[in-house]
Image 1: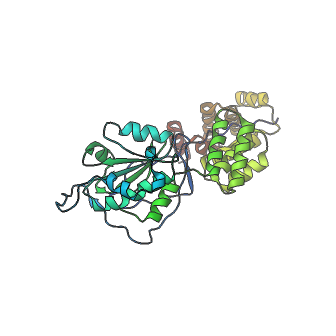
Image 2: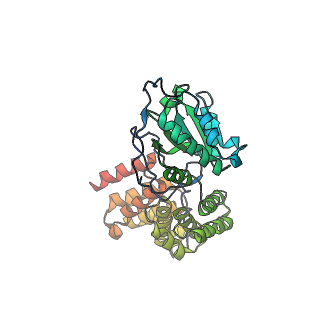
Image 3: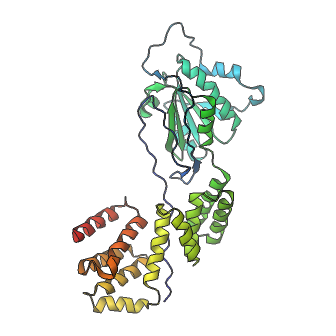
Amino acid sequence: MTQRPPDPIPFPGDPVQRGAPPPQQQQQPSGPVIYSASGQPMRRVQQQPSTPPPEPVPLNRTPSPAQPAEPLQAEAEDNEPVSLHGHVAAVIDSTDASFAQDVIQRSHEIPVIVDCWAPWCGPCRVLGPVLEKLAYERDGQVQLVKVNTDENPQVAQALQVEGIPAVFAFVGGQLVNRFVGALPEEQVRAFFDSLIPSEADIKAAEGYRMLQENQIPIARLHFESALEEDPDHEPAGVGLAAVLSRIGENERAVELAKRWPNHPMSKSVLTAMELTAVLDGLDPDEVRRAAGTSPDDALARYRHGCLLAVEGQWMQALDELLESVKLDKTAQDEAARRTLLGIFGMLGDDQPVVVEYRKRLGRLLF
């Protein structure tokens, strides 16, 4: 019997750290590419400051009477290139009342950068025009939202702002990056660029959309095209591995999955292949019959568990595999234990059912 491998678990949304890091500490992007919970692709780059940025101003600092109190926007308009006039949608002001709509909702459409500033803050008056210039340059690709922390304390509190200028990036409703202080323009530009998807990102995202809609041939075309743009594009590579495993091109699917073995999708593909290999040449009805007539046979229960997994009956599969471990934990070189661990990774270690069954497996082993 040649069993069709179980469909890999859909590509999970990458977890995003919601908690803000300590104030006055720049948080640099980590990792080449991420995807938000909504499927919006983002690029991240490693940037090390060549020169230390000016210290951010504590938010509770009393403004000096000698400092000008004109709004930051006035200075930005004086420095704004003539050719950029009229692109007002690239930069908007937000308030406590409109922040959810201006930032959270809008970030499901394009990346949103939030500039927390105050008119009395000197570094804010340095950084603000740079942010606005770069937002105008990327007209339509990113939204800059400015928040006066003096007038909108609820936003400042929600973002845990303790020093300004403080800049936050949102994608897909999630906070994905931030920095504090007036960085040089080169580093601010890299911050903007890290949020704008590349061609490979866009094609891979479309591939996942097609995969979720079960448009397998179209998904494959998008993933293949993304890898042509960037051969090391991890989301495209593991997405293509999932597609190939569904249509029986197992050799290349395994090759791609092994390039990124720690990725959840890769674990899903490799586990699916292992389950199929166990059942190769076996009749499904005979596997079920053997498990029913020989309930004390660890190998029969193991094969039945693999069959249930291939059929997508995950809870029953986990029960059968646990029973096989209970009967003989060493059978087939601990095959049941290894398969259980593979399925745990396939389903996701943070799933409640996985947490529970992992505990049950531990009690059997130790």
